[in-house]
Length: 355
Image 1: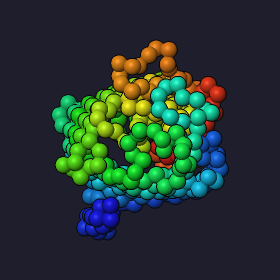
Image 2: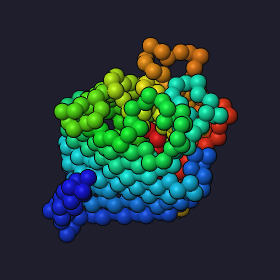
Image 3: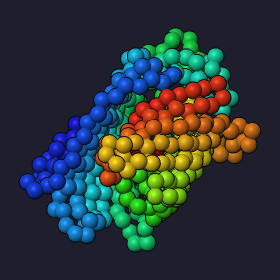
């Protein structure tokens, strides 16, 4: 990870000319959720535009997103996302440090709230993607994912410690794979029209230095339709599945798709979800043009295998949220969402749209 940061700094020093156009924003925030309790954080965004020419599609730019969170439960998260983009190529990375008191409910679609057990884990992770634009709105990417995870604190004799799940001991995971995507949507952080369809495949193996051998496949469909000059209807459908010796800390989390639930409330080796969201920015003058609102409905479930998915096992999440544009032109937004599910209410603050 240190080497990647050094390479990024060197790249910026070499490519950043004196006449580059800069954008910088930074915002502190506070929030509350049932998972984290009270938390505070700061979000920042930097962008350097290089050799700005016409047409706009020919520009090159370097951008860096960063987010830091510290919660009342002593949860700490730092994420930095650098990206370098040219007309046809994009190199991006997501680097994470996390020291996170968390909750284990067990695996499967029918776990109980009463089974909740607290534990603390530490993770370092980096995901790097090199992608190339192809004709007919196609995109081919090479993907590299690496990370280290350790369970630092858990109760002796707990269900987690007595389970046969992999990943209770400190371990390193490393995967290499590819992605193939069709993308007819407009560029930016806030698509208003078009379709994104992506298939990803990753392979984790001892040959790549991984302590765990498994494969991951994911299908992701997103559709955007502009309903009026101020509103967009967005839809997402996704399926992720694993085969092999998957460590429990990398199990797909239903709470990453259903905003009414804690992230690890339902976990298993496979996850399917469907989401629809109505987005509106109703104002067009002064400060108010930065304010927007959303309404969403989400459903999904987890399972040990895809054939185990059942119609009766769907969980649902309904809610709404507030948006604040850090960069109004690109609609790079801070979001605050509240979701309501069966016996669960959750409040989330984060950067960028969920899909």
